[in-house]
Length: 334
Image (cartoon, rainbow, N blue to C red; front, side, top):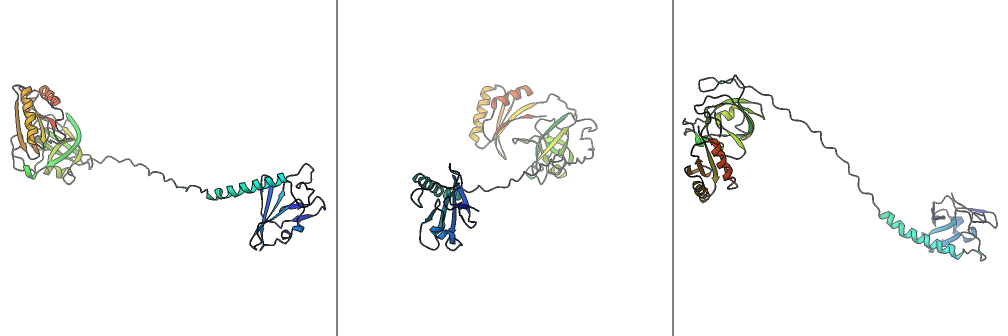
């Protein structure tokens, strides 16, 4: 509660518990005509060092009373009394006006300042490590056409596998046998014909043993083409394409080094395949170069003179990437 003292008469005026704010040492008390402000509504009731401001005669007009809260050099605790009764010093009035102007400017700015909305931070869900699938071992293959699988595999590869069926069913495979889509066979580009391979579906853990009887797949990123029957046995039939691990076992071959060629394609336009064929004929004299059409497009095959693997690798490197959809594939013939 602010109390204002009069230095001349020694009495005080109680501002009735009005809100009081301090701005640079000046007290501002505010009341309305509807409030209990009897002592403030009469100028006579105010001590001389105070100033009563009536900005309007309307009943809702607020009344402001200004009084210093800091003692002056005389120790009276009030504003200096001027010779003219009821007046304030000119310097004081200037400071009062400056203070009021500052308040009028700062209050709207303060009211327009809004705190940014607080957004609750949601922590990311804990990462769960996918456990590897439980491997379901396939029973060892039986029959004279499969290799011995009791020993460790001699070749391992991991990648994508697919399957092929109806359009090739009952047609000649690369090893000369008739392809049976329900048999346990597969196509691979470089393993010796007749090799026994254990295929593990890395998604489901299922396993199956197959024999390599064909060449392929001639699709970028794929390493194995299963028969429809093998795809069903390993849980890949409905998936279409899945990640697998293949393990090949020792296989007795009449030609251990193998005979090799390079097959490039598929080209969507026949003239592109013919251009590559002409370039290969000019560069590799004596090599056999053939251009043919397949279900997926046009292909070019080149057989080095000696069918050596090193020569085939050099040709594959020279061809590079002739077309966005075509690629040179290293293929073992036998």
